[in-house]
Image (cartoon, rainbow, N blue to C red; front, side):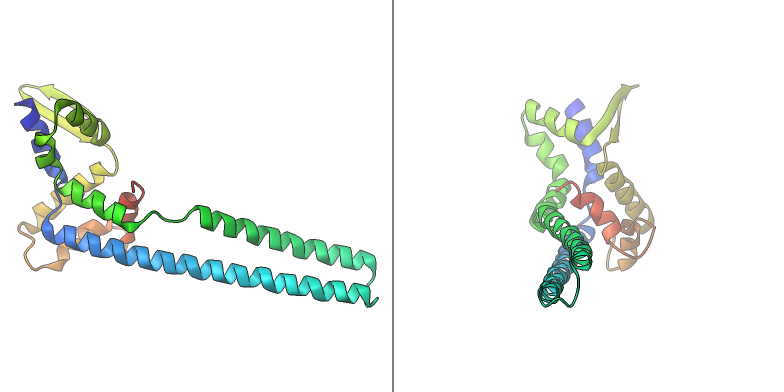
Length: 199
């Protein structure tokens, strides 16, 4: 009986089919645009490192040809090398912060949509692991189970509740997607970033 009540609580995480399809499309689109923007920034920084290296070589030629003195060369060369170091550090950070594959986020969303049914099929040890992952707390009072979810699952629950309360069957109406935008702006990345952070 308690297992079934936990399963019913987990059903609040089940994402409706149209929303699930939309989230998957938005994740893929967001991933493509983020990767493209990241690649563009890397290319720009690499080009700037090369441009600074060219300046350094011209500066060196000017020093060899006595067009500038040693003090001026040292000062200007030091400034250029500092700029290069900052850019190289930014490039290294961009490479180490590479996004995980979008398929992991899509898998998480798809799995979340099946969580209640899968819960009942798992052995007790796996059920406990799942509950520790998604639940902040649970209480049993007056024969009723009450649960509170961890992030991002609590946001998922709120979005699901609002969707069902405002739009019922979700048939053919795209206005229900507004709830999943976080109410802050028209950018779907707001809600998706929470899910992606758990990839």
